[in-house]
Image (cartoon, rainbow, N blue to C red; front, side):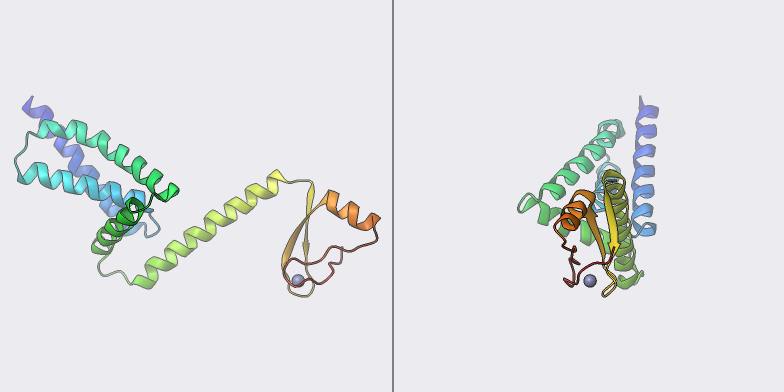
Length: 172
Ligand SMILES: [Zn+2]
């Protein structure tokens, strides 16, 4: 049984190290990943320092994934107090793990990840609405999405669709 305890504890320590390494190297890692890393690290330290039976590692491990899921729900539904608590705790741990990495680099990585998420979303929207057209405004270069149906309506009524940004009539 003792061997089983050490194996479980070894896996727990591995998770603590690997996730924390991920938080440091993947600067765009989300708060739920940061909270998971924090949970594994705190559990590994507590079990080690307090000399708790290492077999407990076996239920602590899956609990980490439950914690990650709970944090994801707390953050996405913006539960009052709890979501600020998770953000606060997560940012403290992340800044500790990322000591020596310039703050600008971290925020740049996060912005890049946000843009990528946004672009993926736009791409999905593009695929979904094939019955629409993208018209670039000649004045401000904003890309306007116009539903084919709206386009037909406008041309029937002798109107021109306008740019959502500057209000200039669009040339199609
Ligand atoms: Zn425009």
